[in-house]
Image (cartoon, rainbow, N blue to C red; front, side):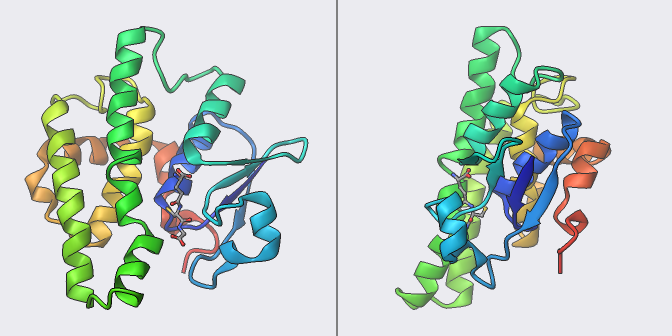
Length: 209
Ligand SMILES: N[C@@H](CCC(=O)N[C@@H](CS)C(=O)NCC(=O)O)C(=O)O
């Protein structure tokens, strides 16, 4: 399998974690968002939105959207399942994941921030204020859901951790005051002791610079 990934992409980071957790052999194909690799005609044939990540399966098919990729990998490699069998708990975890994937990540994405600066001429302080505003509102809800457990949902790593850790990494990069969120930071620190999470870190993608 090949994963088209930008080292700082939190959506690609989710998939890198899952590939490592499930010990799936894969190659990372770097797509540099700053050099606009994701807008090339060739990449658009793979991922028509021009976003990362994109998964290339063993038989050469392309799959866009981290959620769909994670679901595909979880069905194909059912060892270390990312969602539990219990339907209600699985739905609770999915609900946590959707708070990140649907309500935090899309409005803090590079193309949204670029639109604010390039078309609406907001300055870099205003751009940061936008980013931090939506992260803090989103994280307040996540923090209220978490208990003081090792991972998001008790002692097992689940899809919730796969989504949370990249979003926290990003928030730290944008200097959000994470002291406001001790339970989130507790999970972040615990996950970052696990090899699969360590290897998936942006700085550990080969082209990170
Ligand atoms: N919902 C998509 C989001 C993908 C996405 O927004 N990727 C970002 C990086 S995290 C991207 O490619 N941004 C390029 C841009 O904004 O121009 C997914 O989960 O795959």
